[in-house]
Image 1: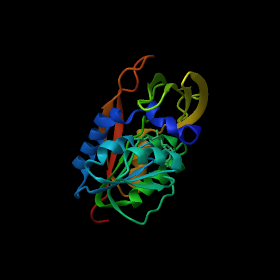
Image 2: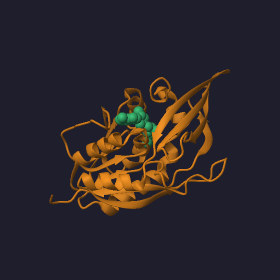
Image 3: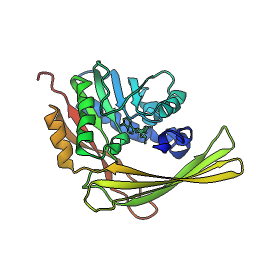
Image 4: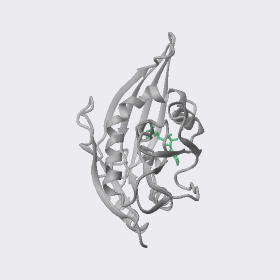
Length: 251
Ligand SMILES: C[S@@+](CC[C@H](N)C(=O)[O-])C[C@H]1O[C@@H](n2cnc3c(N)ncnc32)[C@H](O)[C@@H]1O
């Protein structure tokens, strides 16, 4: 995806790290509520620009992974003290266990059931007994609604800025695959250009998530995430669903 390679250097102008304090605090709260072991080392899959990590690293020692080296470079800029490892969330094997494994919106890029299961399997394999896997999709099928949003920021350190339109729609309703149209307006000095990228998100029913957690031997709990604020074109889904899967101490 060009958003995470060619345009990675613009990522923090698309979504600013400082806006993640509330979300990150909620995910930490869920981890603490569900874990049965002290939380010290946490692995993140698809950590991207490290926006959640900026806040989570105050609580834990983080290992941040992503398939895009360019995105990890962005994360390194704001999280230099964290370990960064390039890896695909569907197949990463670090041969280490963590007290918790976290996967945020990157999991939306699992568009087929096999990919969702493989990602959750990666998480489960890296989770120590008594630890917890926390997964936060933007939507499950039951909370999905088409929407459009816009935003962006100016660079505080350079004469450039970005504004975006993000339009999420499902070509075949109930198909479980949404299209995301990103329109990026990139300004450098007085030069402005527009780029468009069409991406695909996987939107799975709750039952699919719960089945996969169960098949992987994790005891699953559904928690409330942060509420979405109403978008410019109507209300966005009411609230994120946070899945917390606890790995039992004894198999
Ligand atoms: C929206 S960004 C994540 C931002 C992140 N939540 C944060 O706090 O900064 C989505 C990320 O998913 C990553 N991604 C997509 N497919 C992936 C895969 N198969 N394995 C690992 N990362 C993946 C992209 O490279 C991108 O960095």
